[in-house]
Image (tube, rainbow, N blue to C red; front, side, top):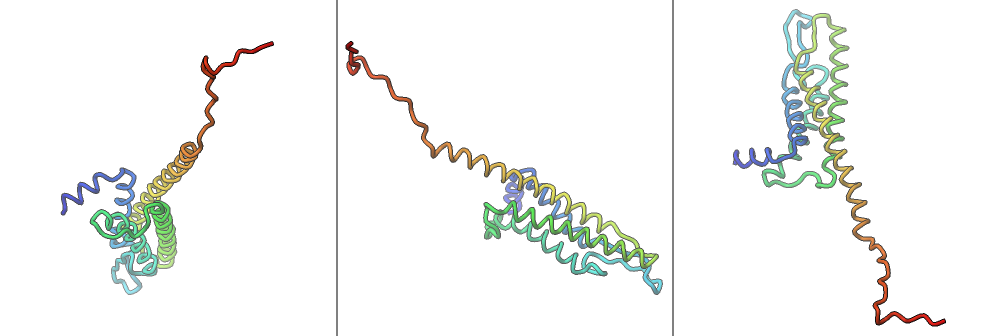
Length: 182
């Protein structure tokens, strides 16, 4: 099963592989510390994406990137398609864009909290999740643009195939030709 899945993943487009790697990195980044430092009582704390003030944002980021990964790997393993083939690139682009916006919102919330509490700081998990979301968004956009380009090309080629060009009339043969009388 592992060899078959590895073969299927290696047969995917490079853009799709990078998109899924970016989503996987963003999911891992949600579990890493986003904020930490000394709390009010002198206790040292570290909060991942599911804790602190950004718990809802971290959960939404996790679900969006999990959805992107599931929409890729479920059909590869023989499961159902979550999204129709014709709209998968647009849905992935929308989901990764939303995850990136939520990452930026979480970064602003954590930055505001670090200004309020003097001994708190932004940790590397926030940056890992943000970079993974940005990479996934970039490659989802590239896949979406490729899909739009192919759709436009198919539209014009389809019109050429269905429209029959008028053929020029064939000249009459020597037997069919009437001599001109004046």
